[in-house]
Image (cartoon, rainbow, N blue to C red; front, side):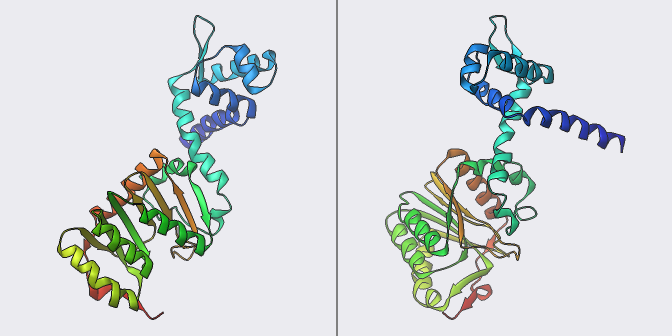
Length: 273
């Protein structure tokens, strides 16, 4: 109990320093480059005296150090702390989203701890806009396309076939809960099976798709998370081209792919539309 109390005290001391908009602005600027008090004053739009007072607090906390030439720098501790800020920014900016969507217990902790990678994403809302965005993304693939599919649709199938015939290597993961319209199974699946037999496309199966993912040429990615009923919500898409976000998405795809099993048509969920 005492150990927990000590950890809480240490956390509160750090968050107390980060709670100041001025001090956080100073840290953000120093994260870009070292600076003198006069430059910091201009950047954070406050007096030199106020900057001096706040910098001293950051120095006492160990986040900032002063060099012999009167330049202020982030310490190693300060740089590590600033690496965590995107995690909090993503959660803060999407707090309404988390009211009716799930991520905790959906993605492994090692990905949750890197959730700040999504901080640069654009959010696409409404089912129509999501499908249009995915069509545009997948149609732009020139080298590779890696997808985790929660819901198959005819146009996507045609896009995959077209891209594969143009030399794009496709890796597709489906779940036993992935919805396949009957017309996709009858009209699209036979063409995809031919591509698979030629080694142009690889397809694997997992028990349940909880997060849909789309990675185009390792340069653009998109993710769709589940709602509180643990159903992938096709009305909200996180999409972006930031390298950190793409790396996060690729790592997640590879993690799921590694534990996948051979595709089994008998386990496919076929529906009449």
